[in-house]
Picture 1 (cartoon, rainbow, N blue to C red):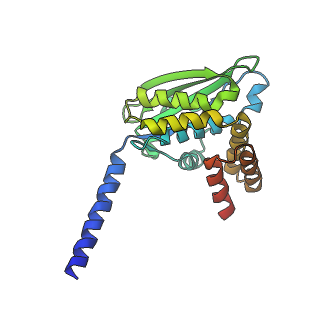
Picture 2: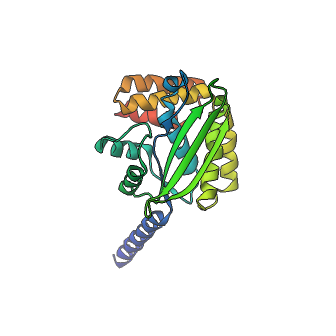
Picture 3: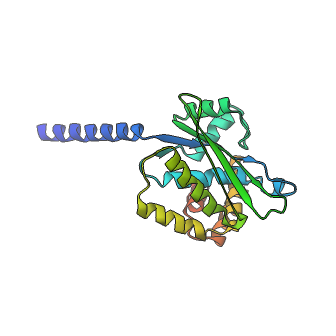
Length: 232
């Protein structure tokens, strides 16, 4: 009996230590990106406001040395506070949201295309939620067809610019290779599915997640989102 109690106590201490360790990790959150695409592309690319943010979360979350706030948690705050859903929020609001979700760093960004739609650029700022100051800015550009790879490259810059723990090389290489394989059509379908989900149009979201998987069957985030909706 004494041994059992001791074992239970040790296990409890281990879990507490693990929880404290997780809390001590640098925590980062990402807001939906502001859509600044020009001309007719502005409406067509509107779903990418949430889609690009989700891709950024995925890439940052590949680093086991940090904690990244889930997109659903951010969305819940945006809904509760009746804030902009497209990333068009002022710095004070961005910092406020970051504090509400317990993040040390809050990423805000904008994406735009050139008038011909041949190049997409992503620019972002990272706010320190304790000081409210901009602590890092960066950008990147590529063809729209290479959007996932572009997000991967920008995420790597964020990790280095904030001096976060290094991404294990094997993990980083795997993410880079995967990003190069995801077709742009799958990214757009996935982005539209996220928008439908947030609008509580579950049937539409399920259909779009399935279409995403038709384009890229190995896309795990789409599988996860589809599974959650089908169980709800």
